Image (cartoon, rainbow, N blue to C red; front, side, top):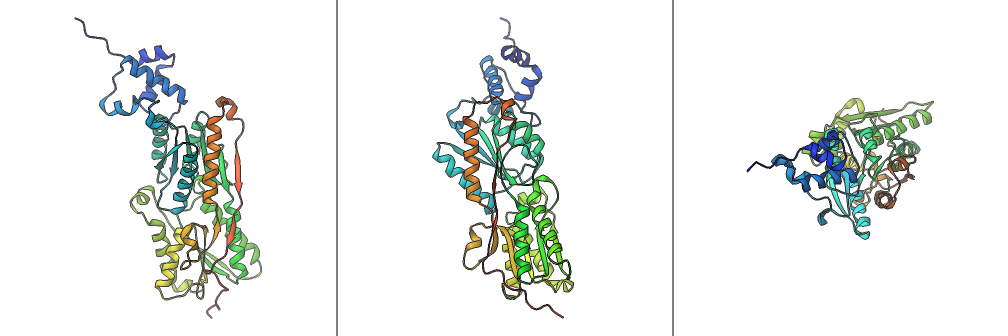
Length: 373
């Protein structure tokens, strides 16, 4: 008796009327291309029905039924990490909103790594999630924009970003202006901005915009008097971020210690962290050295996460609407899932929802101490 002929990708292509190359990319889970959920489901269903044999390591994932009850009504939530309470709060807010609509959430952490981001996006699509929410600007906006033409995606990010995806945004430049104006009004003319990696890349736009706003505002307000905006930065790559849970706190602590021990920077009267997690490290370093906040140094930052409002902390910070942005992001992607437009219609316009930041003044700021002579 002759052996049964093995099913090939050509057979699946003929059965589905989809090109062999597209079938190959779907079955091999290529991360650099994207297809509609309908196309992916059609190929996987055909492969399973015809008895296509994948290599052992690909069987379980690629041929899992896209209609499986375990993966219905799921939203994927992408975060760079979930140690920072900014991202954890947004993710929790999304989950709360999703639950009310009968949806579940899956958390994916990218650690700001482009290759990882590509892989996880394709993994989420192959798992048949109904949409993806990025709690940050993607590291490869072009790739995500391409996927978003055929798949519901919403991004939470900075207003200055030119990304062509539905976005829930906050103007981080305005946030920086608020901090600079506040510190200047208290007499601070020599401040230090302490930060993790800062570049003009769109994925790190919020840090850059905050710093740029502080620098520009001080240049404007101190046009006829001396001032300093010292910048101290700790470069952090994705591998380091993955292996160090408290890295932002640690960066704030160490950079502040370096400033306090540098005699050339003895004129500093205020520190600004690029976010609240960095600011907590700054505050501990100041206290460790025996100084008082705000008597000796003022401290400001951005986000207004939960610990910043605790009485022993009382950090002056900028409100960034974490809970509201999480709720609005889910509401937006939920509406996108319900819409029936074709990909071409969806790509003709984008939803942009802006939350305006405001400063919350607490006990970590005070009038600048007398400059040392």
